[in-house]
Length: 139
Image 1 (tube, rainbow, N blue to C red):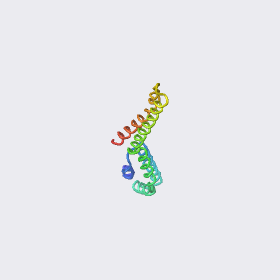
Image 2: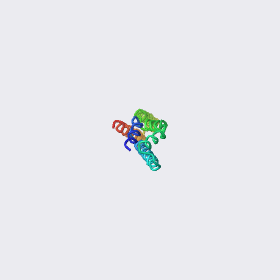
Image 3: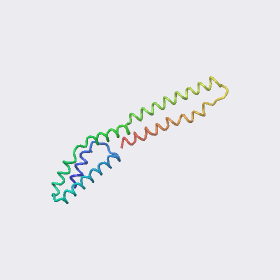
Image 4: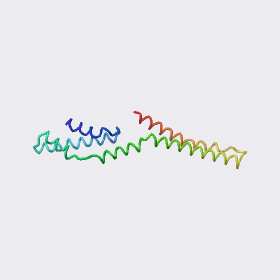
């Protein structure tokens, strides 16, 4: 059944590796092998059963498109870097507003530092996600 495995792997070769791809490929190979075994039980020889199973398998363009879309939206370094830049800019604006409000309304009490610790976590989290996706994308 190596022919079935090589056929299915050839169909999915341009799809980036992921757990989803791996499970779909394994499921397709298993289904095709079961179909071949059923046909062989009905009296067909192995070569004819494999040919018939591969012909009946049909087109997988929809599955390939879904996997590519899933990979590109999930692991896009440009999207994660855009999120990182947005979080840095937005946190900077919020912190600037808090500093302005602190010194304009209550110049004798410095309180802007306390919400600063909460706000600063947002860019840190986005940086971690950006770094993780960049690191995984390079593998």
